[in-house]
Length: 513
Image (cartoon, rainbow, N blue to C red; front, side, top):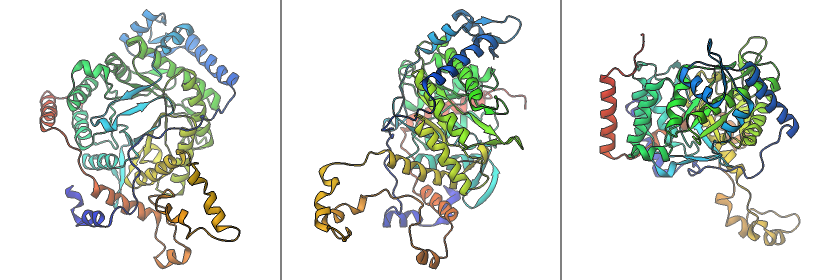
């Protein structure tokens, strides 16, 4: 934490006065009502049937011989002269039917285990941007120190339930060993569940072993206790590449969760209509899910949706749009049709922590939540269409997520909450400020946001009209100062560090640069 010494005794001052804006406890929220049914059942079936026709008649390129062999054994039509695989609809239905509807992802700290499926929600921190901004510094290339600081902030924020990957790409670590050092940081600076990238067989094997060491379990324990997960993105349209397939092959074989997520931008890598883009998303997702079950029946897998649109004037991706919300809602309907956990995302295209960032994120979040998403990726910290992680945006998003969690808690309706006695005591024309009913409840009656300024105009004006962006920067610093590293058995840490040191000596994963 040397980079933050200039903040002096702030941590002591915070501890002395208590939290200015308390966090909610670490707890997975649940959706207390039915997810939105955006389209009628017959139209949902039309998308399903069209997806199966795409897989049967057009097929999908599987750029890995082992995957094609496995699918061929299941009854797929494998073109011997190309990577094309055409899927029999009944085969797809049969394979997808083996996937479990719910599963638990085990964290290093049992208090942070995550349940995926049913009506549970889990919020994951931003992942994979090449750039970072915040803490008094402008946009910059990702590096290990900012990576570590974002991991610390994600660990400290209770509303973030797990890590989504690298919160920023630590570009100062060579790609041959980056996965080793980055995973070591994730496992030592945090005790929440973590994600590994499907970037080829050896990187996947390394991180599987590191997850086992960190949890101090055996190989057989690992297979019954899923302990890391991956996102498998298709290369839309209709292609699954070698590194992603190798992630499926290794993780599904070890019973570790795979979240198959086509990244389909309507008008660019998918048809320009929302329905057409969803047909393609569904076809690609079903193909990947079928492969996980061809590897191992019953392997945990989730249905991922990431369909949005592009600005047809510039070709730039757009997020938090009406089309994005529609796709998120229908994606949830499709996942429920197949009985699978559902992944969505909090995304925006803004270049600053501003009004656009807030309203696009809120639109994305409500699409995810009302669509019944079980896993919300990039839930906090995403900026610039995913090209930048932002400390300040992580704080803003944490505030939005805490408000969503509060909104999902059904209001109390017991006799005391119905307040008949208080209403009778006050009667017409009175007020409730001084009633015994209010005095007994006012301290925790309402949700307290992290950032909102509820002062009147005169007070706000006298205070110099404080800028919300500055409040996010200040609060990000305070939260980082309050971070405490989670405990780890010294012997486990030593074993992890020795594994990393050995794999680094061996060269990590070979690259051509």
